[in-house]
Length: 445
Image (cartoon, rainbow, N blue to C red; front, side):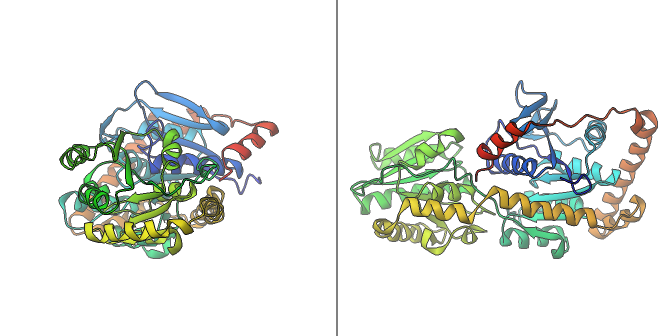
């Protein structure tokens, strides 16, 4: 790739491997495919257990596990200014040109975006979730997001619903927000070689068992479905505080032989659970974009899902049955899906998913966003400070002072440790054979 067109990207989030989830998978697969396109990609996250320092992953993907422990829900304790020295050093050492933050709930992401904009770097943010407007937590998070996106170059959302939500919460101009959906590794999620018979119908649920994922709905839906269809079994994978309610439901209705509780399922074993079923059930109460639905469809399962957030945008109508987040409506949707099963071809569905979703396509579309960010006009920091004053009568003044103090600390840090004294890291060059192996194995989706 022409060096003038090449991007040097720093992906930042508290959520990354060895933790598993939608954000973690998104960062990993996107990074691998951007590497294939010729860009340099570095990941910055906090330490996980004994995993601290610099690690290398497939394709030469470099990961900085900074020695900060998670505070709550895998998030680091907000430090605001104390993270500036190490983030500044990484940006200079790796000769970064674009900082890409992921997930509004990530403390490390917000701090990296703040420091990067203070230093004049191009900044992109991807929002992976939907948030409300009424509860205290959402109000606080929306104000933090408004601060982080006040001076951003471009933003990405995973669905059109997510874009509307982000624009309303942060006040960012809609023309700065791109919609790029997630994807699925179709090489990893393949249907069973032999089609399952429909004598016994297996409905699979793989989700965190929390309120937001609709675990309370499952408590009401599962007994009703088992009562209507004696040949239906459920497999529930996942763990969380609502697991106790599901266990109690199973005991109360004597469904131990028809509802299997697997507990937490490692990502490497998700396919083996999916291909043992006919229908995938998603009961989320809010969802920007459900990657689990893509994985189930790639394995040839018909999906039944609540009609919330960006879920209606994920699959064609003949591959999913939507229902309102209401027990009765969900039971009716499952009944409809059971009658549709004889007409479902898992391998045909898998081949359709190959054409619909590709991480290569996601990477190329993200590359366009980076190009757009690079073309944004350059303005000095003091001129950009005025953007924070528009964040509210009192909040705007507070944000203004926070950024001004950050600029002063950066100036002092530049005097104490000049940029010229920070050694730049040479790029890792892969052999042609290594590049071909990565292209075949890592980005086949």
